[in-house]
Length: 113
Image (cartoon, rainbow, N blue to C red; front, side, top):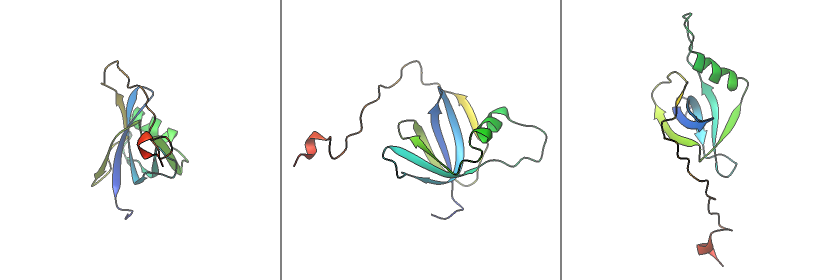
């Protein structure tokens, strides 16, 4: 994958939707996780600072790679250019999906030998 690719990743954390941009997104080496590398943040030459973007920048400052649980990821889009990282309200209502185990070759009853 060329480094010119940019991905917009939306995921749920702390009851809010976080939107970040990264150059590399893979299924990761940890089962059940999405791996993000090379975060992209908007370079601003103006004095106006978005507090949500600053919070995300501080959260991922010095982070080389992060893993997100695949159940927290809402969407991954390949985009032409990066936008502003942001945190917004999660408008999914007050119902939370009950976590279900992911079937693996060892636990899937249809995969008996």
